Length: 115
Length: 112
Image (tube, each protein chain N blue to C red):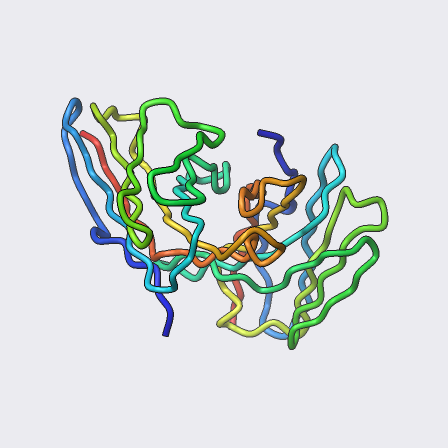
């Protein structure tokens, strides 16, 4: 069964801490994405990557950075966590550059609380 | 990014009832997708639509790509308790494959 695995389901951090959210996929997908999910706002794209060491800003990149050193791993970094970054974070992956690239496989999510 | 307007925001229905939700946009797009998120899980793709006017079914689910390419709807017939969850529409357009814009979600509750 193909999977996108997010290492932490629940995290509680303090304001100003550096936070790493890890995501690994075992489908050899080229594309990886980080979304955040907030009630009433749906899913909003933070960053995405089409290849190793490549990254592009999504719609809400402020306060975040990403790292993709290996094809299967895409990390989301909060350099200095703030309370408005309390949210559910969803990682996703997809294959290639054709219409199939729009078929995203999501992880189960990481719920981050910043105190 | 451009937003999608998804409605209704929530629905409370009895088991066996039919459900309809829709999504609209001010711009035209090439692809509409519908995802479902079960409680505690990530969204899972239900149906993908690639052509204006396309009507696609997946079991009790039916989705259509609006003829104007600015809207889509999802129908669920004869709802059952496991239909509970959050339903999201999403659109893709241009050459940014995989870079989806999602609607706000419809929270569906089904009473037995």
